[in-house]
Image (cartoon, rainbow, N blue to C red; front, side):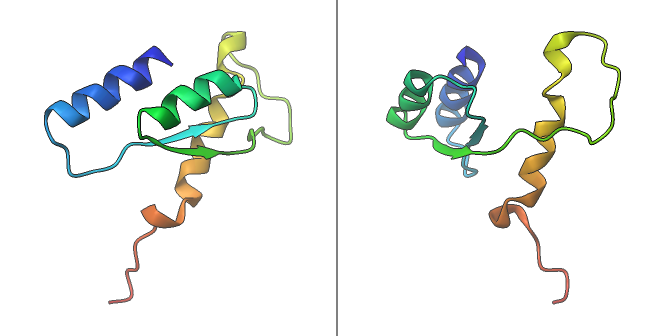
Length: 83
């Protein structure tokens, strides 16, 4: 969570025009989510995404890496290419 807080601080410091959207799973403690919300971040709770088949990973900490792909389904990031 410290990395998210530092990133939020850095983006505000340079006056980024882009919002920081933070996706969290239910495994993130509620207290941590509350801190992110209090910092004014846009927090979205998402379901963990796992492959249907067993995929070997280098270390246990990488098992939830698939969940990062959920952000591609966020509507605010979808671009209409028909115009």
